[in-house]
Length: 139
Image (cartoon, rainbow, N blue to C red; front, side, top):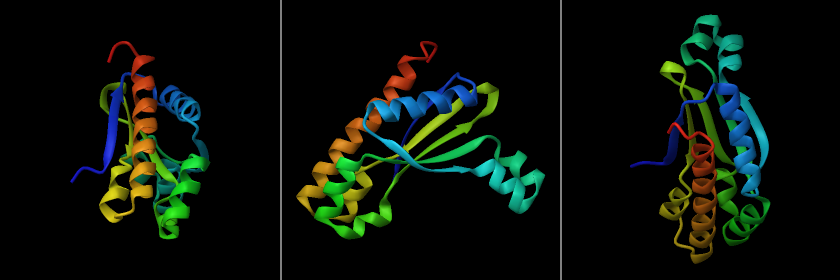
């Protein structure tokens, strides 16, 4: 079972994070939370753990209109919000950007309203990933 949509771009990590933020904003998502996994591992587990994971951030993205519709249909869906978006460095100077696949919600709910929200979120998140790729012609 796949539960993410991902792209790998030949961008430095910091630039990929900035482009991801912009691409999400362009699709109506705000960033509610941010977890710097490398910094957290370094603080809690030691420098070796931080270096082992490398540059890695989890952005908690939320589109208020979609979240409102989802929660109106099924308040329990709050456990799946916000949508996590991961930006992580990979080998050879590349960066991977991954979003949760909103269709995961559809597998957990029979609600037509949830399906509608998932389809809209999926379209927006895929558009965000696509725009990051388009801004990076080498991929």
